[in-house]
Image (cartoon, rainbow, N blue to C red; front, side, top):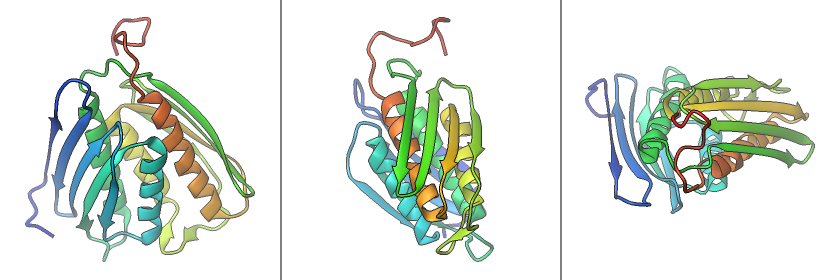
Length: 209
């Protein structure tokens, strides 16, 4: 890990219809770098976090239709909490920078996703009103080496920085792996809809977000 700087720096990349951003976050707990392209590209995630979390991040990016390069490390000798939360923060910041003034996107998205016996729902408003509602009962508290209580920490941080109002709802299921994967897929599909390009300015009766 690099010398801690307790900093976060980001920049939008490109112009016109290119919705991209790079963000670097360095703290005493984590050192993370992200390059995000909202409209597609390769997905490459290299983190020293539990493998299941990397799998979920890859799932989120693929179903959202993002190009995503995410790398870095954190103090997982303590536990994965700091790293998982900071990944949410750095990814959310990249989304915010990619959207610029938050005009020209569809704003709302929704998805209902099954995975075997599990069913999960996501509803999303990308309207600069940060809020997370996560309703889920984990039949097993751990999947692989990943503590599932950290799912809420990730999505709360993501919603905070990206300006998401995000509702994630567990409908039913018996296997925590299936439930979690359905949640991340649903969130990705909802994001694909909500972040889709929609010409015509701000999608709001107020005229601003």
